[in-house]
Image (tube, rainbow, N blue to C red; front, side, top):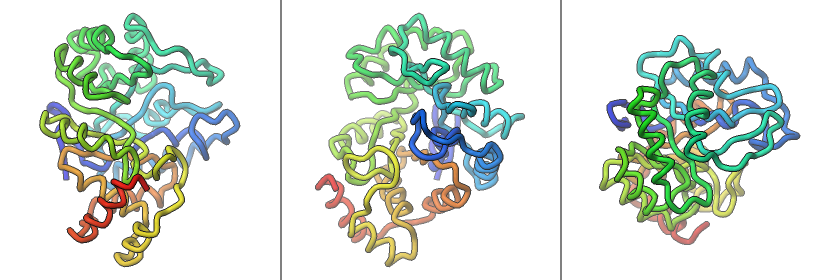
Length: 290
């Protein structure tokens, strides 16, 4: 199960790095930093299991851990087929406070910070994550210039609506859209997911394991998901990932974890093929927003 991000081929199950720097809720200033050894183990084990798509950002850090630095330490020199996708737009102060979203002229500095932390001379994919921005044209034009300069290979979008994709495509090719989506989670995204598939753009849900109205942690599991999981001898999380992957060949998932066992189960979800009857039951659950 693979998909191409431009000229880069990735396995459809990747790894999100957001949870690597700390235990518990991401970005919680009270969160305990994760064991460095455990984070490094997860990253190296992911590559051993065939993961070649890691999603990260310079603003993924805790008081003493940086996701990008952990990736650099664990995986450099990088495998030739490893694709690192990073985000720009948001920023945090050294204390962890959120800063105003980056202006177009600040994006180069964010790209260069990711390059420095990752120890790379270019970034494979940079996604522009927006917040309250109605028109992405000026920001995307700046990223397109960085792409032309060789600092960035491919571009994507995050937290966007269909009209943002239209705006960006008028500037430069878009290889992926990262939006919050999952089983019973933002079913209004279904049409946009389809649009991305028609245009050959990867749709990469974040919070794919979250239930409706819950975007972090472990959701209270629905009885339907639990019943299917028990019947197949798998976990509820694996059922959710398998359903998400079944939404289309262009759908990728990057579940975040700092636990080696959770990582193994997430990767194994790629082998779980749900039956038409199971998908029908889960589709109905999804449309109910549960």
